[in-house]
Image (spheres, rainbow, N blue to C red):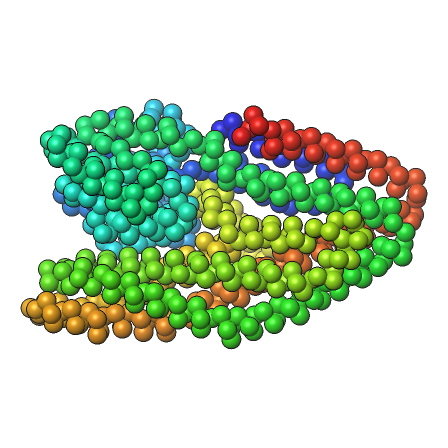
Length: 586
């Protein structure tokens, strides 16, 4: 376990011990502890099937484990993990898994449709030396389109850094690769370029290609992205790249804000408890009435916001998405025409898929970002009277603004999914199934409870849940449109077919399906935001109600509670300073 993980877990354990004998709320504390304890840093390796990804990873491992060849060998994303007991775990969409011998790896290509991904456990010193990083061998662009899209959709939200491998034979970063990397940027993911197989070219040719790719990187992304040249020294070069990733820094970035928010919340609860213990009965009852009215305001506002989003924002968002998809498909029409002239339906579908995913992801993410901030602002405004009342009661004029900022951070945080992807899906499936059996009083012979994983509706999660079904849709109906490809059409005829039939067909399919998907996500977004506000208010009610009553019953007990809570607050501030704010921890 990393040093930063130990520091954060130690802090949470200390906080838990400190507040366990108080009325403070600690649910988020337990969730954070679990996330930090099980977090994994996934590093997908992407590129065309001919780029040499698997050979590069074999060189890093020092053994030929992953299949390589002239045809796509990696149909399933394969996570490389250390274990003294080598085996393969093949995971299914329902969370179940199948354990196989490592020697069975080559046979799984034929069964790729059964599984989401593989976990390959090897007794390998290179993997043991990087326990916090999980390398992922991704399906190449030459694998089946369905499997490639499945892997991209699965790992884009949770990869912490992507290694982009391009073969020197390509001469530059291809259009397809450029679109893949643009998706990484949309999701806020960092990446490193590896120019592979440089041993196959002269030094002059290597320099020429490297300069061209460096110029592409600078123009399209930023000049801070690393471009490493890789030849027969692939293992050493990949080791160097991994050494630059700084896992300690990544862990701090992932969890520091959540830890600070937790700390701020606990201190706010303590301050409210201290206030309620010092106020008289009439003042506390007034605060409770204002809080109850605030909950009513949230419920009234929620219905109004939902109606406004359906009437105003939904159509606007759909129009912008479809317009952007149409514009970007027209920009690649010559690429589509060339694929059509070659008779390659798979390549044609791949281009459409990549363009739709990129355009939809950027547009929906941007729109949901704007809408979410607007929703939070609307609820904040509706609670303005409560904000002033509680600000006066507790001498904290900024509590509502602070709460709004916290909810906005939660919604925007693109790394949120990481903690919930930790461990195997099979393990989590089993645990959740057992829990549901108890909750539903399940009896032998009855149908098993359905296991679902309702992730936090971050903007990233909303984007993914809308875009992925649309990508599947876009590639399902295309073969019917593409029957003309083998009819020997000329370039001009094909260009007109693309502009007048293919692109309009894609836009029609999206318009038919996108509204229902977006409407569902907008409803979920509003419900979540309202629940966050309501939870905070209910928590304030509970604290005032519990602690104020003890003041009326026994003044001496109340004085002891004031002294104890004051001590807890001071200790909490000291612990937070050492673990979260100390310069030595930065």
